[in-house]
Amino acid sequence: MNDTPHVVAVSGSLRDESTTRTALAPVLAAAELEGATTELIDLRDYDLPLYGSDGRDAGDAPELRRRIREADAVVLGSPIYHGTIASPLKTALDYCGFDEFENTLVGIVVTAGGRFPTPAILHLRTAARWVRAWVHPTHVGIPDASDHVDPGEGVDDEYADRLEDLGADVARYAAIGRLPELREQAEADPITSD
Ligand SMILES: Cc1cc2nc3c(=O)[nH]c(=O)nc-3n(C[C@H](O)[C@H](O)[C@H](O)COP(=O)(O)O)c2cc1C
Image 1 (cartoon, protein in one colour):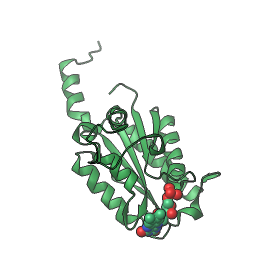
Image 2 (image 1 turned 45 degrees about the vertical axis):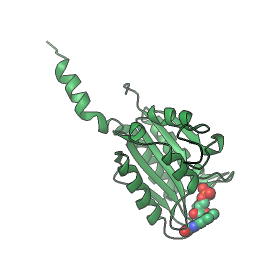
Image 3 (image 1 turned 90 degrees about the horizontal axis):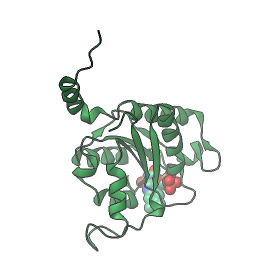
Image 4 (image 1 turned 90 degrees about the vertical axis):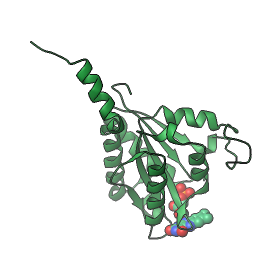
């Protein structure tokens, strides 16, 4: 990692009028204010066949992996579908693994049409831990998403604040997985002042 953290958000909804993609914008804006470089991975732009149908390097999978490997922190955004995460995001995650996520900080944002985004948050948290990511302790779940998020207008104040807090935090703590390595470097090359 350079001194500048790189934060990538992945939107798991392919809908043009996606509340999830809209909710990721304030996350990335706040990460930038905190000094990070950012990128939104919009899965509409990636050719990703269902995993297993054509090998690990099918379609744009190598490019997706490259971009996620470059990130110090990854914010995973998904709508809840039938109590769990949306299939486009699951497919994207299936093309990735330890190489992309180990020592990477992960933030989670879930939107729901109903009142309970929590199951998908917990499933994303589990999937991220399974590939050895560091999952940020707080997440943002947006129930009744269409009442709070308008793809034209953005996110209302209630949730914009929480999304911005998450974005600032993932930028601040992006180096968390590399702390032992950074400490070793500092010990090997101490900065002395006299
Ligand atoms: C196949 C499908 C399943 C859904 N399942 C749930 C659900 O279990 N619980 C819920 O609250 N909303 C459910 N929804 C609604 C979406 O979570 C909600 O509309 C979400 O904000 C859509 O995100 P998007 O605007 O980013 O596409 C479902 C929608 C679809 C299309």
